[in-house]
Image (cartoon, rainbow, N blue to C red):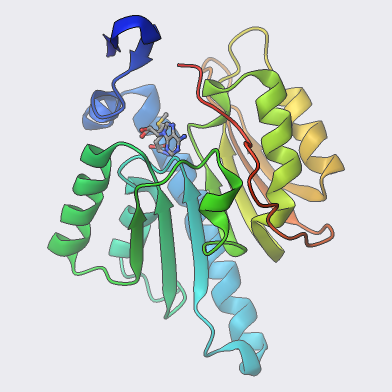
Length: 231
Ligand SMILES: C[S@@+](CC[C@H](N)C(=O)[O-])C[C@H]1O[C@@H](n2cnc3c(N)ncnc32)[C@H](O)[C@@H]1O
């Protein structure tokens, strides 16, 4: 799963990283089940609140995924065409591996999904979000485990700029020792994110969090480095 890139040190092959999804018994597949279920719940909640507020019915629900991979979490849910989901959803995926974007593009074509922007952009740069944020649903899945602790914290402190009021954030993090998730949950609370759920089954290292943004909205700061992958 890892490749050597000259002097740059070991780097993960992020295309091959997705191979574990092919095994329904893998930890990654188990994680996907939880992430999709949180996505369904968030989208259904947004659809219900739109019904409550007739004035906002014409507004699409917006989804932003940082380091989206091939986007199978959000795209897989939208392809289900569940009538409880919002009628209009606009999705932006930020991803730097062209092979993953190509797979997402193929999936959209094969399933007839529209309203999906596939952007070959560095999600660690604030400028990448200038025309993509704030969103109603923000996905940071498979991100925090690839950053230094300081970058995880900096990213969390930047999340208010990516979220509309009441937005749902879904994130994942391994709990391998030393487990950073207690700190992540505290940093999220401090940044204005109320915890909706934290799924961390005994016996597995993965965890999935869902939080609602109740804090003060913020503008995307220009020209900031939010994080860099270290793997
Ligand atoms: C662990 S995978 C997670 C993929 C997807 N979110 C998921 O959970 O299935 C991390 C992804 O981030 C992408 N990536 C790495 N650095 C990135 C960056 N600076 N900006 C955008 N994408 C990046 C990789 O190509 C890879 O597809």
